[in-house]
Structures are given as C-alpha cells and as structure tokens.
Length: 306
Length: 259
Image (cartoon, each protein chain N blue to C red):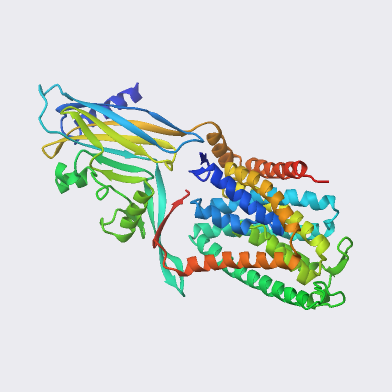
C-alpha cells in the first residue's frame, strides 16, 4: 500500500516504512539507544531527501526515548539533576546545530558533512566499543570480574572547578564537562538526525563515571528533550518535518522497541556492547565506502527555495 | 471602462500579433482538468482529446497535420551540482543555478520533431527538450547555454530519469486525419500548481494553429492541511509533532507495561 508523504513529496510503501520502524525500534530497545544513526541512512536510501530524513527522524527518536524514559522512571533509574544540567547545554547545542544545518544546506555541502561526520563518529565509536567489549569478554573468560567503574580512580576531568554533587548517581563532578557533553550531544543530534545515545552513554561512563544503574535512563531523558526540541526547531526554520512519515516510524518504532528490550535483557552486557559496536562500525564503513567509491552520477539536482 | 478597453486592445494585439493568421481551429479537451494529490496518489495518466476544424478563411482541411503538445509545471529554481574527487572523497565542487525552469516538462508529438519542422522553427517555438529555454545564472547574466553544455545535459538527463522531463514522439495518435488523442503521463512526484498545456498544429513545416489548456494539480485533505500547517505555522506544527511523539511513546509504555 502506497502512501503519499506530503512534505517529502513522494509516495512510499507504508509497510516498508513501518517495517523499518519496527526493525530499528527492535535494535534501539535491545541496546537502549535511539537508533537515529540507522534510521536516517535507511530513509535516505529509500529516496527521502537527507534534510527531510534528519528533521523527521528527530520526532521518531523522541517517541522511542519517551517510552524508554517512562520505563526507567518507574524503576527510579533517572538522575533528574544530571539530566537537567546536560539539557541546559544540550538545548544551546541543538539550536546551534539547526542553524549550521540550514547554512550547510544553502552551501550544497550538507550531504558531505553528514557523510563525513557519520564516518568519523561511527567508526571511532564502533571501534572503541568493539575493543572495550572484547577486552571485557576476555577478562571474564579468565575468571576476572569485569569492572567498568573503578571508584577512586580519578582522571583529569575530576580536577576541574565548579563541582556539583549528583545524588542519584552518587557522583561529585565539575559542571564544565557536563555542559560540554550536553552541548556536543545536542549539536550532533540536530545536524545528523541522531539522538546521540550511543555517544552519550559511553561519555557519561568514561568521563563522569556515572554508574550503569542511572546512565541509560538519564541518557534517554536527555535524548527525549533534545529530540523533541530539535523537531520544533527544524519545523520552524526549515519546514522539513514530515508528520505523516514521523507517525508511521513512531508506531513501528515503539512496538519494535518492546520486543528489543526483552531480547536485550536475555543477553550479557559485554556481548550486547560487542554487537552494538559491530553494528555502529559497519554503518560507519558503509558511509566511508559511499564517500570514496566513484558515484553513479557525478551530477545531482537540488531545488533552491526562494 | 479604461481597464476593459485596455483588455480589448491587448486581445486585439494578440490576435494580429506575430503569430500567423490561423487557417484552422483547434478544439481540445482534457480528460481531467484537476488532479488531486491524495494519500494514495501514485501518479496519473491524463488524456487530451482534440479536433481540427476548418477556420473561417479555409473551407476544407489539409491532408497532413503534425501535432506538438507541451505541458509545463510550475517554475522552480534548481541547482545542478557536480562532484569531483578531493583528497580521495567525492565532494560537490561546482554548481549551476537554473532560474525559474519548469519543474515538469513534457513535449509530446506524433512523430520525431525533426521531421515536423526545420531547426529554425523548432528553436523559435521551443519544440523538443534541446530547444526548450532553460535559463541559467552564469556570472551576472541569466541566459540559456548551448544545448551540449554539460550542466544543461546533466539537468535534463536527471529530470528525465525522475520522470519529470519527457519527450516522446509516439504519445500523439491521430484517430482520424482530424481527430487526435494525446496520452500525458503524470508521475507521482509532480509538484502542485498550475500546468499550462500548449497545443501546436503544424502543416508543411509551419505552425498553422495553436491553442492552450490548463491542468491544476492540487493537494487535498490531510496532505494540504499538513503542508499548510508546516509552511505557515511552523511552531505549532513542530510542537504538535513533538506532542504526538510523546503521546505515542507514553501510550506504548502503558500498553506494554509488564509490572
């Protein structure tokens, strides 16, 4: 069944898009991420313009992280104070990202920047995750306990001023790295149409030493609010949010996420991180291939809005 | 009064202007004057019927006619970009802007256009994709380029690939020597707006009659509503989409609640 998308201005197969929503939702539920880094490329692949894809995926991520956030809220696994601190900088990052997005689109370099950023981010993060999880797996096999959090081991981050105490997470850190992380996530999310969960979770763990109990829930609250505001900002500045597309993706996404969560709970943490690392790395390589290989067509057309 | 007189003068000017005196009269009718883009729109095939009638100063019809139908969509400014390899990766290195060119362009005839009229006439009347005026911004000037300009070629090729530009020498069928039928395909990715149709009748290499018609492509129902809302009320539209996301997220967490 074909359905016409009013903003993307093309008809798509409703079951194909729903299926994509389900599949990405499954992965996002399994790993506790938004899944934007998979959804945006998939939409581009079926012919939706990168700009519309990025803008519409933002609302899709908002929906799936809302479900996740509510679940974690019930388990009291959200550090509200930390989320609010990250958020205050995240909103500024998002606004800056939407602004840059508009500028780059005018310069015809948006596709390149999206492509390059995906390659760099995904391959580095993917490689780190694979390395880290393989090491943990090996350590576990030798019978040593896998400890992610080493209490007492401080890094340079903990030497910074403006220290704050976050009770729920039981950490005492400077506000500067918290703001920095918030800004980067908001910025990247708006430009690349990703929630940034797969970046935020490792950053919170490695830089701020946020315990695993609260890290995913907190990250989901942040993703929810930055993506909801990115939706509004994209709608106001670029008029590119396709509500019909977003609706289909959301419905598929939230259902898929439920099954993903169940599958994810049956797997060990290290194994799960290894799988996610491989997935992230593979998507990064796919983008790299696209940048390097001779394109099918050297020419492309874009409508100029007057 | 003055306006009416001005109009009459204009009409008269048009009638006695550079176009040749019309010996024949063309009567055309479109199967559908209004195409609605709904949620199930996957493109449409339009049919234009027409009859050639003898005009006042010609008692009978000639024996051989040729017909060229040009339909154009709303004009858009488009940028054609060219990629080049820079430090191993492919980058949009150069671009050319096509100013107010038709978003949709189809040129249909009953036989190849080079048999219908000579190159001069074809260029003057913009018969064929090669002769259609596609204005580019070149430095400070706005002009069409030579037909084998690489950007122009790429632009026409890509638009043809998307089904938006089209030239066909078999879409016009003469049912009798004076009754014809034109099949006009409208792909699903056409923009909304007004589509003027220009019908030109040729005989012996010269245009002998010309008429016009118009097709309206409109969005209706939900589609129109969504487009209007996103264009005119961006803030409310964005807020509503976000709210929809939150509601669906919340709803899912209630439905699938396990504890």
